Length: 90
Image (cartoon, rainbow, N blue to C red; front, side, top):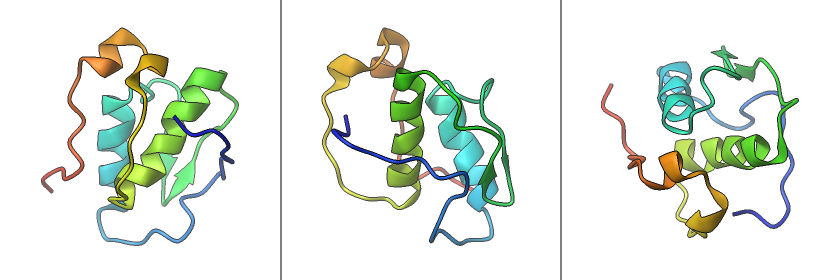
């Protein structure tokens, strides 16, 4: 996971017609859709547990289609075992 990260309340620097839909897709895959909502690129909260904050930091990496590697050991088993596609179809 990220050694150091900062969460913004908006998806800074990201644009696109389907940004909210793509973000919702990843929030669901990261099992955060029950905690965080997205509206016009804004996040409803960043007041989360440390593990949830790390997963939320992954959201931007997925939306930017940024190459990265991560140690899956820090993720809950249900997330390690799910496949998170970096290219949802919209």
